[in-house]
Image 1 (spheres, rainbow, N blue to C red):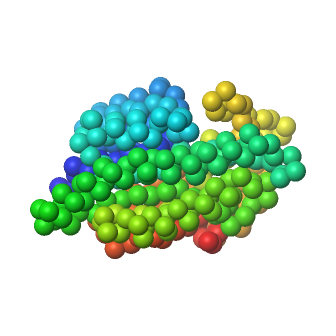
Image 2: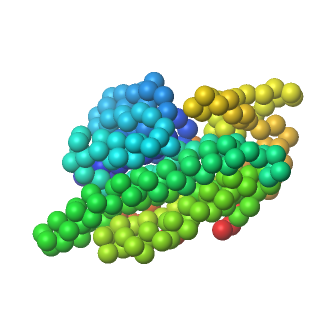
Image 3: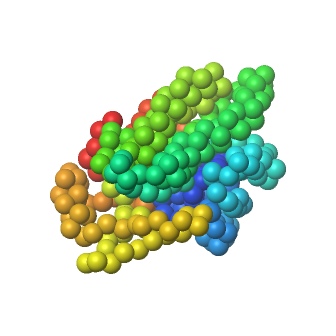
Length: 276
């Protein structure tokens, strides 16, 4: 039997990058996955990939910052699979500027995506998880459920990222709080703080080249000059950025039974770089 056989997992931002790898790895362990992305095409592609491999998955498309998203996301899991066992709050992006140039729009866009959206999702999931825990207790069973919130080594402060750093520090505080609130419900609540991971947000740029991604009508610059990548890599003890698969692995391992007595922790996945 696969270690997550029969478990129901919700993963935000899982149409691309790290989230995609998380969804695929959870499915490989036997979990049924609710896949989310801003756009339907990448979400449905991941669903199809999971199904082709013999797994179960369904898409819930939309922005995690939408007022109705949390309830819709949670209900997608309940309606299709009957409950919730794992939630991965992964969706996110960066929109950088020094504080004197940062607009309110930039500030709230990042705070809402990285901190408010996970709060709303977990708030919406609580009644369902609580009811499941009471049922388990009445039947004399101990069933551990898992929450993994994605943070960053930027939670310790990073120039040009006051919005992102504040959100990622906040998610650690939320994680530690919910570990105490939800322990009685047999829920492990942990965070993973990523260092330099190779994704479309950190892709190498050449010369004056610039790239953008569209986030809800906003053109957000992405990519890093190769010189900065080389400098950052030299500061990483393992000597290179991590891959999306490696980043996902650090998340998935906290969802496995081997981590049943680990809660309230912030694990740094940075190749030896970064502390919290």
